[in-house]
Length: 215
Image (cartoon, rainbow, N blue to C red; front, top):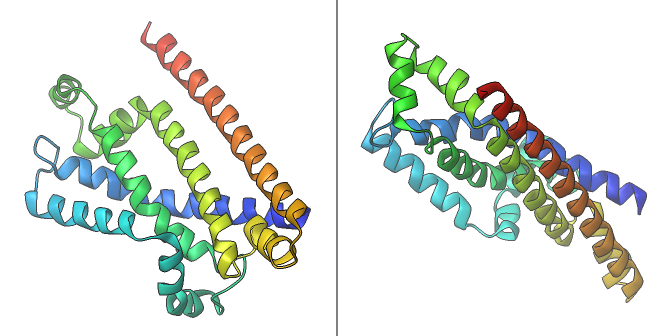
C-alpha cells in the first residue's frame, strides 16, 4: 500500500511539473493571440484552441492505449509507473493550457496600456505583469490540475499503470478483496483533501501578500 501511494504521488507530481512547463507558454500564447491580446492572430489562435479542444475531449483510457507506441519509444515500455507519466502529461497539457488562458485573459486592459506607456516590452508584460498579477490564481490552477492528474493516475491502474489504481485492481478487484479497494479509495480521498487544504492556504497567503503590496 505504501509503495502504491508513493508511485501515485511520483506519477502525478512528475506529470504535473512537465505538463505545466509545456502548458504555460501554450496557454499564454492562446491568450495573447486572441483579439485584444499582445500578438493578435486569428489563425494561430483558432489552431491552438482547436488543438486544446481535441486534447480535452479524448478519454484518458483511450489516450493511454493510443500512446502505447510513443510511450514505448520514449520509456522502453508501455506499462508501469514511469511509462504512465507520458499519457498523464499529454492529458494534462490541454486542461492546464485552457485554465492558464482563461486566467491570463482576465487582466484589465488599462493595466497593459499603462505598462506599454512605461515602455515595458511584450515579454516583460507577460512575465512581470500578467504572470505575477495572477500568481495566486495560477497556483490554484496547479492544485486543481494535480487533483485531476491523481484521478487519472488511478484510472491508469486498469492498464497496468502502477500506483493505487493498479493496487486496487490487482490485489482488490481481481482477488475479490473489497477491503483493499476501500483502502485505496480512502487514501486517494485523503491525498486529494490534503492537496486541496494546502493549496487553499497557499492561495490565501499569496492573495494576502498581493493585497499588502498594493497598499
